[in-house]
Image 1 (cartoon, rainbow, N blue to C red):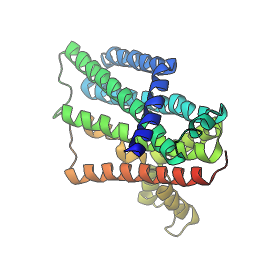
Image 2: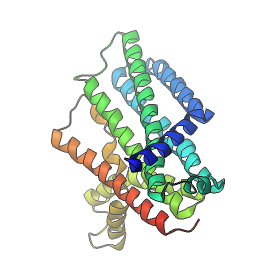
Image 3: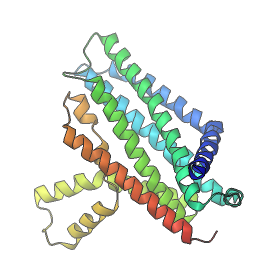
Length: 271
């Protein structure tokens, strides 16, 4: 029970510090502005505006969520090292394991709440834009699948947050960790598509060194593309239960592995 209390203490302190940060409200306000723009831009499309509204709404959630991870969560994490407040935290009866788990949970709650607020704003912008034009959202559109898409995007942000933790623990520098996390995002978002294009068009031989390097990279970096189901939602398609389970388990295990590595590295590191 004392272990859970210490983890919760770090979680609560992290959560409150993030709520006090004005950058969070600036990011959420920017999201609201983008959703308002979604209502305006959707009216400019005469062909399937419902699909455009859904795609732009979900893209805005993803974009604003990335800004929360990069410019708020990573700043809060790296700040503990750069401002040396990590010494004050660990001077208390709090272990490094408690710190890692509590810090990730606190920042993860911020990501979760931000995604929920952005998801509600996206749903409102989609509804308003399609009602204003007197047209249905999309054929076979499901709000349940829309909610699932928001959940998957939140899960991808938590995976990226866990990886950002890892880079921060390895570098202790906010700028370097941000660059490495940004690189990991682009690799994870595009690696699968690039590999499929090369394989389908036979641009490289199966035994080529470049293809093998891409195969190794696809196992190291997170495959963030699997969490992106915007196109599926916009076209009114559905996902099977087995496929949804695989995506959730993949995100859970990848984030868990990153956290375990964080704990191991932090335990052996001198601060």
